Image: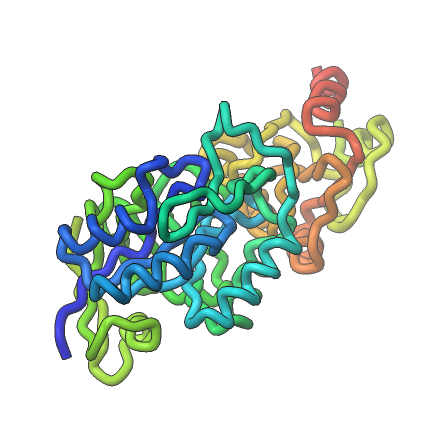
Length: 238
Length: 110
């Protein structure tokens, strides 16, 4: 068992708000330089840059988890961290089926492009990715768990787009694997983690969480969040 | 003015909480951020929102609001309506947008 450092909330250039410098290659290089063992790629309502980053991470010795930062109908942001490629592909289909397809204006919100390993643009998403899905937070949580994923309300201590800002408090019948905070650790019944929510390369690893686990992997992370078999979150205050 | 009066004047649908239709309305508040309503809505106000999550009822109860009006033709879930019945705080509905509904509500409450 060892200490694994992870930053599980990183946007790529696919997110409209993500800097064009946030290519999978740059993210892996920065993660390596910051001493991270594991990262998750979590674009707004999309998983289309996960596979490329997973492949680049494998070459560099960094574990990359597939994720998305999902906007539910209440304008609440939640991280959904998926176990494997099959779950990612299926969850992507679910995201596609629930998206509003509001036409995107890159001049106002920024580009939404998918690139290949040579950093050539291979697709441009024509609808606004960050818009709320036609799915309530209960439906997002259910879809996440149907895919074997971890469901983590994002930046719950922020005054906008968080479960607390939109819904006043955390509904007690949601199945929550952990909550993500930006500031101090709240007195709360859920496991607490911190991540960078990086949109520019300099922010990768600015916040992170250390976990005690055998190796950096999705399965070990899930065990750490549940506190199973000696795995656990090593909580440092902000 | 009572909740039942605005139901009639604004042609609102009554989803649930019929027992509370006789409550007195003392003002209004329009917001979709529950954290904002929790901090600022005054007791007796009718709350205008597009949020339909069941937490709406918890906040309405906490702030002692007279009724909730859900706009844009959105519909509350079963759990929201159940809690509305338990709390006797009516959940009402309209196809109008929040802007249109709030304007008309303000005019009749003035």
